[in-house]
Length: 209
Length: 193
Image (cartoon, rainbow over all chains, first blue to last red; front, side):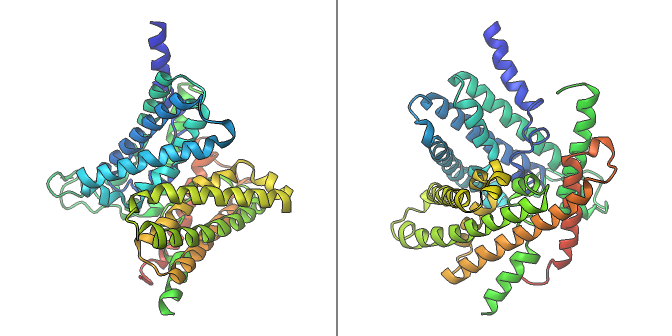
């Protein structure tokens, strides 16, 4: 029972208290770069989650064999390997998503949140806890991306689940004049700023810190 | 020649790496609090980005492509960048200890600056020739520096402003960046490659 609650805490900490986007402000490039459509946002979040879990587990199991002085290059090579795997998988099985995410897929390797978790958590804690930490942080990242891309797609395009014409839903009907600003890069910054202010209010109200 | 000039113009103003492409947001938000550190960071990034484009381009054209090792791109590029950052760190500690102190944690973090990795990857993906790749590296890093330095200037003023509670800190910084990005939107469509 007590064991289980530690794992639950590891997961929930990543989603709420140490949410990588809303609390730590780490790994912001893909957050702003791929969130024009909800599908892309969720795809990016899940890809990063897989890399995060895999690298956390491998680094936690190798931590006793990695010399402290060269640990950062070792971590980076582990992360880069998993990013290469994910890139190949996406290219093979999800070519549309792969095209839409573009250069941001290989850029997962320089996502600070992954290296930060390797350095501050996985290199010190046991394997199973590192797994759940990776899962929690990854989910927190995915939720943040989903929220931002939801706002941006609904207001900026007036659609949901686009741009695929088979799945697209016109939220406000076909005649809706979309707020183009939210689809633009400037809108990404502004929407994220507003979401951050909103989470600040919510966190203050429920006294989470 | 024409292409070189348009690369310079596009990657400094039209397709600014930070404000239009979202590469290098972490240092953009992290080290833009003081003008002085922003300038120091910019110089370090210009050096690392230019060298990184040069080295990765050479590696890619003369080793990875001829031997069909393109799938090793991510691993090799990140190792090149990490060693370059290490070099800059050692040099700075010797030449300017004050700047070294000021940059603090953000100096080793240039390794995880997406802008550096992005410039290396894009130079290969867009099939630039060597001279174009170098110019691309320099102009992209100058575009990054431009955005960073403007932002630092604005944030020094922002310190004195009365900002509503929930917006204090990173929220107002992001909205300021949004307005800055809106201004750069004016260049959009002026030139394409």
